[in-house]
Image (tube, rainbow, N blue to C red; front, top):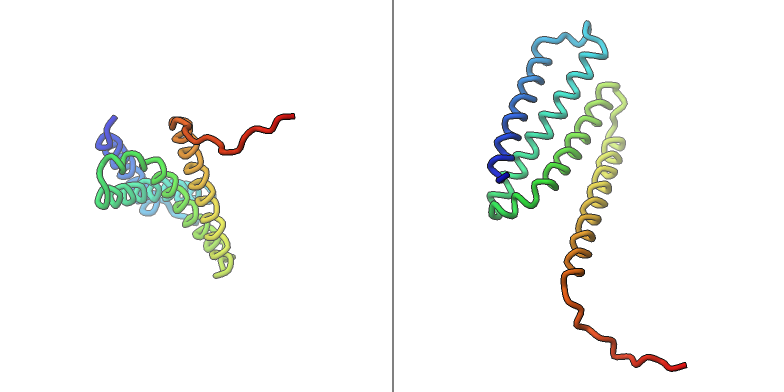
Length: 148
């Protein structure tokens, strides 16, 4: 499937998630809906934010680079969008329970950044190991083997 096909499906699902979130905001009273209404609010907001951020990151990637690079980085764009959406929803949940402080938000942001750096490093190491296996080994050691 081409990049345009993926983006079309992502646009449609993001639009559906936005309309579901807007429906929850407009038609569900949080006081009477209880835990179900709040959960529905957070789930639909997560889906909408993830899709919208993925579309924005992919649009920026296509603007700065070519379509091939944007297609290759679609998975990392999705991962980063999910991380940012989780970060925002975590902060929003802490604010809802009135326990969000500056230091809490900063520590949570650093934790999400460290998780993303781990995944970025792991994927770079995976790509390096795959590319080194494909290269012929032409370097030879200059040391002579010792005889025993």
